[in-house]
Image (cartoon, rainbow over all chains, first blue to last red):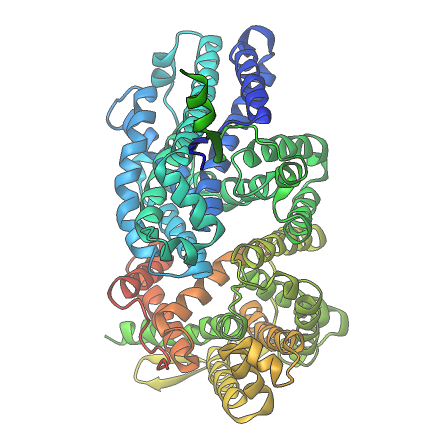
Length: 346
Length: 289
């Protein structure tokens, strides 16, 4: 009889390569202010925001099974909170981003308590109603311009950095850092005990529950954490735009339709999906944007085709065919025979 | 006092329209557990079909229903057979995302064809006819017709569900799809018939919406939300509950608008959230079991 020791490993050969590639890419991107034009920086920062938003939505819908079409509620909330803190309370804009996260998490608790009463697809529309309520309430805030919105005062903008270039660099690095932190937090969560539970819920909710996972509790936690992150990203997006209005802050097209498109195309329920999806989305946007509303029409059609014929998205196709993973998430058992080792020692 | 009576009367009458938005949504959810995110955009599509028909043939809006209702029913049947049947299954995501994509396609398709300009259907003199209910309380002829039609539609659906062979097929598939299949029902056809019926109701709702107020390609999602709120307020699975839900939503909005025009939509949403908080099963849920 041979004794066997087992350990659980996350990394595979592809994930080791993946981590190196990601590391090098991050260094190159962090140095972008030294090689990129102003336009490139703006575009990249916008892409980072979408990677973060889509990754958060992916955690919510892809893993926890909470398909929300109302995440614009928290994007807009973060944006409005930043403008409120800067204009009314005189807080530094960067500090306001860090306040937006925890405040949104607190707001998310009663929102979850209400919307979780709705099941499945009705939950989706319920979250949309909440976002509409947020939008209508925001248009009642007369200090922030009511329905027509407001710009960030010049004094607050100058307080961030003395020159326009310094400010743009600062926002660029903030966007990159925030997205890296969001992604790292999601990876850490998925590698933890809760991550195993989340993956189980993703694969089969009923089976997960019967194995003793507190499904509702985990969903609750994920919803609140996602609100935390989404709101910080929202605050940063509107700090970059320097202007906010209820319709742009709570836009279902910008913050939900695009985000869902990115996640579905890239691969829902996989951490790499939103990154691939964002690249595809921006390539499509840069090449098709001359077509106006026709471009959105094409996007909707592509999303339907992918959902029906490649429901795991582009990364899902690659991962299934080659067994790749860019980040060390999957668990696999490594077995080593103990008696052999024991035999070698005298 | 009579001012408030008027407000509540207006709210009740528009509640009929909301109930029609809701009936189609509730019908397909009942039969195949599908929540159609494009429902509101299909209502707007029906309005544009009616606009095209009335302009091309010089028909009045109510007569155009003779064309719009079968046309939308046909679209519904084809949509279900060719697209939506493929999405049904245990997974919640495909139907939700496919109908979300459909919503974007319809909105932008209409934008491409008809531009973003506001349109309205002209119904002629009937639009301005009113009569007095009691001292100081007036009711428009058109809202009254629309409410009566809504009641008739809901009553008709109720009869269809519980008195006809098609209704039996709907209920059987709703209760247990695989047993229904074993009994010889072609569920793909049953689902397509349910969607056809849903879009026939959508067609009526769309025409009345278009006569009543201005519309443009972007107003669909808000109609979906009104319909959805009426369904949840009324209680899942109950047709008459849906009518009550529509009326409660309409009256809340009317009262909100009377207090402050900016509060019209907010008051409706708040009524919905309050019901969700205190009575999540809705006011008149179908007796389960």
